[in-house]
Each structure stands twice: as structure tokens, then as C-alpha cells.
Image 1 (cartoon, protein in one colour):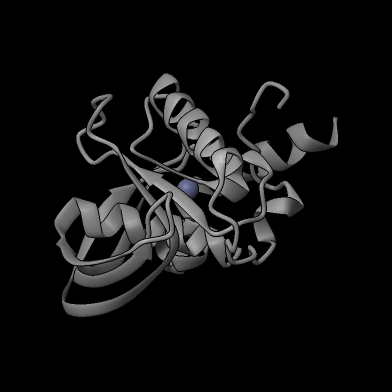
Image 2: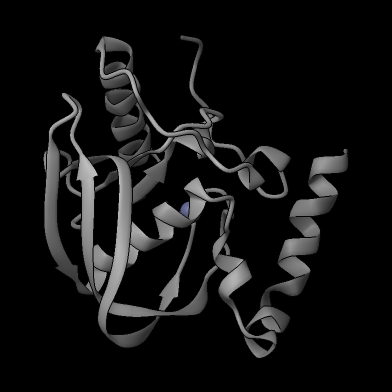
Length: 168
Ligand code: ZN
């Protein structure tokens, strides 16, 4: 595998719907561990495989941002359970851009681990938020899609800046 890089908005690959994982082998594990290292290197708390150009349903999450406190979710599915909360969110594909996003406060989630075993649990607060943000990436949805017009306006010039940089 060549050096892994994080794709930046407006890369079209961030808009693809990712494929389900059907093979649980050492390549999958290697990709997950590389993503975990890259997430920590970039001071992130979550990363989805499509952000590194791999269009598969794999996400890694580290709610505390501390190496070792990492979760790998394969083929994750989430259902909202209760409440909504609005929190400032960022994304490694949008360097320097933050905006308030409203999401459910508590979710039920089902996924598989690296060996294909099914894991189910409830998550709330920050953990729930990261999982929903990363699951959005698997469907080609970006956090800016979830902003109200009022919240898009303050970051609009930064978004245009990223779009310009891409064309150069
Ligand atoms: Zn993101």
C-alpha cells in the first residue's frame, strides 16, 4: 500500500456510496490499523475509509483522541434512539472548518469487527456523534450537507477556498 492520504473536499470520491465489506482478511485489518495511525497523526477522532480513497464500509473512531482508545466498525448501521443535540463539528477532509451540526443524542448501532463478528450497542454523546458523522461518509454525505443556510454562510468563503485550491 502506498502512503495513505486524506482526501480533501471537494474530491468527488468523498461523494461515492461505499461497498459493504464481505472479506475479513489481513488486508482489511492492515487498512484499519493504518487508518487509526493516520487519524491520530492528524489529531482526528474519527476516520472513514472513503476519506483515504477506499470505497468500503469501514470506519475507525477514537472518542478521547488517545491512541489505544480506538474502535473499528465494519459495515456499521445506526438508528437514532432519543434526543437531539447541536455541537460544533469538524472533519479531516475540511481542514480548519467547523460548524454546528444537529444530530440525535443517543443511537443504537450494529456493526461487525475485523473478524466479521457482529457487535451491537448503544452510544450517546460524542461517541454517537462521531459514529454518525463517519457513517455519513460511507453514504457520500458530508457534514456541510447537514448545516442550515445560516450556518453555511459563515464558512462559505473557506469552502470556496478549498474548491479553488482543488482547481490549481
Ligand atoms: Zn468527516
